[in-house]
Length: 445
Image 1 (cartoon, rainbow, N blue to C red):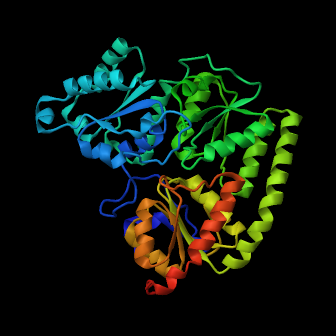
Image 2 (cartoon, rainbow, N blue to C red):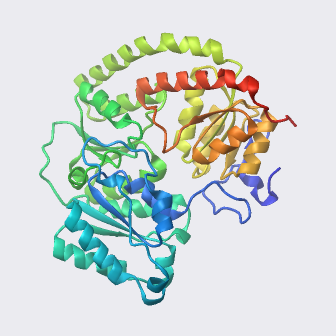
């Protein structure tokens, strides 16, 4: 069922006793679901809405990552464009620095962006174009931040791209101090506003009495990010992509950080309480209590219906980040769904220890899985619901079971109490769709 060299990356809860290993390079030949480091940097930086995003490389790299996050914007739509220097054979032979310079000058003149991110690609790493010097020259002429993102895809996995993106963001932070601050303020790191979640969260914090100074990077604005060093606290939603940035800001600006999840009733409530308690103001804490009480009063009765309807459902989860997987397990338990498979692309040993503690015996926990493994695990556990991203959708449909999108492209807000209601409804409607009576499902082993 699996390659023997991956034995330490597959764990059956209640049966195995070893520590599941995470964060290691993919095994050659396993056809990992992971993406490259270039992709990782793009998914982090792309939602900065008023910046110009220019890919220095063949057109395929820009096409592959265009609109890679369905991040929504409250202002500029510049980020929706995907620009490329479109390197051809002659540029590979003679170099593409001149083409990059001309491209940047023309685009800045046409679009007047607040900043520019220039992404290197594999072929640029091979031919050795000096992107840094070109960016520096354009920066001096145009007097706006022009930031090279040296993220050749062969450098590693998506997680390595996250780190490089965080370093690129640090070039913006601390370069402006003009935004008006309230008494209590935070940065939200790692929410990408895929379907408007950031606006839901900002609404909660506003009711409590806390200002969201900047969001890195969902609905991101260059000036807000430049002012991010003035916040009192960094609240890290996606630790896989943003923990490096939080640690760097603590080191350079002495801003403390906490890890939270905004998915599910329990984690959402804990996040609000943790942020309110940080400021040691009883009024903020009381405001948080009132908000949580009112939200639960409206939400919990509706979830009881789903608990009764879904108690026989068995779910498989495979997502990028471990924190997301942990929240999904908790949320599914709340609506009566049993999790029989849970896996991630970027989890570490500690993440998997936590997953073990909240999963039922018999649950298969897997790191860096592949389509063959996932398909066989689904057959083995008789799962009838798959929750994952765009690459997992095909696996679910080929096996004839319901699929819920929990990745970059979704259009349904899943954060907060509203998001939990949306999620429960989506799971219920997916599992109980009449289409399954006409679909040939997989044969159980």
